[in-house]
Length: 65
Image 1 (cartoon, rainbow, N blue to C red):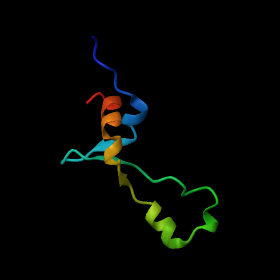
Image 2 (cartoon, helix red, strand yellow):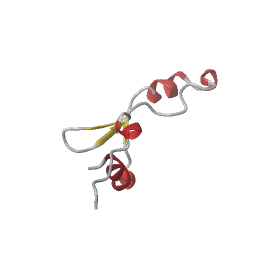
Image 3 (spheres, helix red, strand yellow):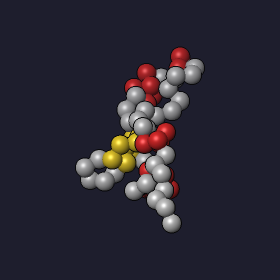
């Protein structure tokens, strides 16, 4: 069976940390209708987040890991 190719669209959006966690980039819901959100909410949305542990198997498969 041949190796599975890396899904490049996902590889550009996810980085692996030194401890093996998967960091995704910015969070969603930050741009559209931003004037209706509080400043605190928008500030917290600016930061990245780690991928949920329940999605690890699927994401690692798509990354070819």
